[in-house]
Length: 307
Image 1 (tube, helix red, strand yellow):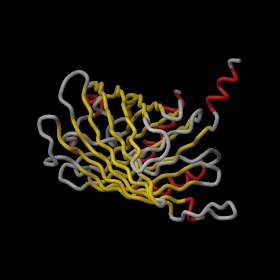
Image 2 (cartoon, one colour):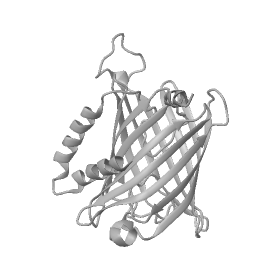
Image 3 (tube, rainbow, N blue to C red):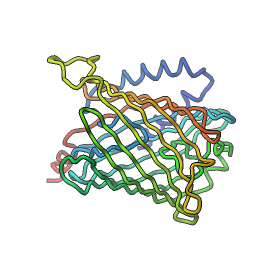
Image 4 (tube, rainbow, N blue to C red):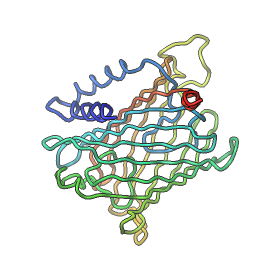
């Protein structure tokens, strides 16, 4: 596990160091291509929005997702999270996250962990497929993964030095109502988010919506790398909705982000999403990358070890 932390933080320092961003982005693409060696693809193309798709029972997916944050004022940062997603049953998916970040002219820190669970109450496909989501977060104020935007979250929140911000603990409960629909190849997903700090404070609200589609629905007769059906493109939008006392769009931050997912024949999925802040309180840009790797039948193989 320590090696995972080291890799994630080294990866972040690589992007927040002395190089300019464009050469680093090119190097990232090369690195992700090298990592694409085996596994199944991740289903959803979004970074923030959840669709109604659950992990296959018994499968384990591991993903690394760095986000480059470009604030209007302050230092560039890279928030990075590793996720371990396991399909417990057909209706229950559980996921564990490890978060960290590095900030230019500051430091690299481990910022905490999250435990997420998603439950799909209805069997089969419906016009609208609901999923219930609950997550416990044990993180600190230095966290920069920005996996959701709620309340009056602001791009100005990153001005506190890491050494000071990491001392402020945040133990939070986050819930989501996820609604997903699939129609003629299109996926349309809506999320309503409610989050509360367990040590005090009020409920904060947010949203995320996404729409995506493969570039082609019909599969090619032969396996290929650059076939159109291997690419999924879409758009997601997310932001804050105020809190329990002030449910509003005023003084909140919102983002619009195109998304692109590339499923390689080996099974690895690569993701990229340049996000753009839409309000005065938003970051100028949040540029996200991702690579995921899935182990089919992981649960079955583990059980065999103990027979």
